[in-house]
Image (cartoon, rainbow, N blue to C red; front, top):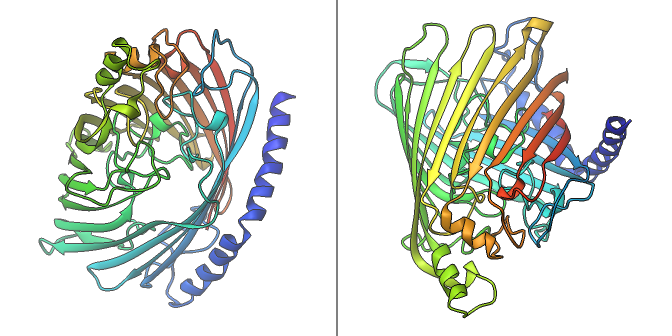
Length: 475
């Protein structure tokens, strides 16, 4: 009965949300067939018996690309134990909320080496309790400042330039972020403009797509990677990557927000930026089951507060509650490291693992309040039950914070996500499982369940169980 009610409420909310976004949907519906009609050549690289996974075919022989997505997530939870609550606590009474994102992707191949890519989005709804109270929040699509405008906005606008380093080529899958169907096996790529750092760094096949896979922030991305981004998750910058069949290295530098979780980026690149370096290696460990290893390091320069300074001001009686905002200083540096394993397994299984650490002295600034993280999970495609485009997955993540960060929260300090007014520290542990079903062409439905122990690192609150449903459409 409870699940039926949840599905019913979500369906009504989803329909209302889609109705509000009809201009973007109409644009996608009109443009995609028009782009496809520019070339009459066959458009598919799928086998004849493979199901269509988009509402419209996307030609592989035209210079243009137009596609779109709609993603609607409904989440709720019941009452859970809480000895106390603060201004940044997850509400411990029942609640249900819906988020939605509509994206229209366009691209044009200016030449065999140069592509121009543009993504216009529209986001609505919000997360439970205003998207606070859990470091590994349950819905990656939510916008953490609900006062942001609800109209369309430019999410990505970038150029991608390829420099071949040999005559050998490899086949690649054409998509909205790369229009090529083949690439030089050895090449340099230069990407510049507006994008998400998570478009290019810390990727894996099992936990990187909140629209078809896991929904939790720290399952889909490394929670300890405080990557440069505004509130919506985007930044301006440049990425250079050197790619070979066996390994790759990529470097990127991008603008940081002016304030923690801020909407506006600091345009002074020399004083505020996020520098990232990732090494990717494809070892030949198993003949038929590829392995990918990624090692990530980053260093952020920004107007950040130091937890110890805020604690010292409180201890000296200068303030009644430690305040990280009051001790911000321009030019502070935060650094960290990440490890990412992507391993294919027999019988259509695939597994992933992430480890992450950052120094934890300066405040969490752009992503979430995590300084140590370990996650692992796997998924299975539905071949065994004759549903080849379905997928089931499960993952477990453990998040933690530094000693200074713990003390700051325990004394009543607030971050941009956490702050219960006190803290009985424990690691935040999250188990998530989902099933995504391919319904028809580009239409997918999913159910998801997350169990969060010690939300916000607080043993005095929780555990909390969060069931979710998701509707996803690919155009």
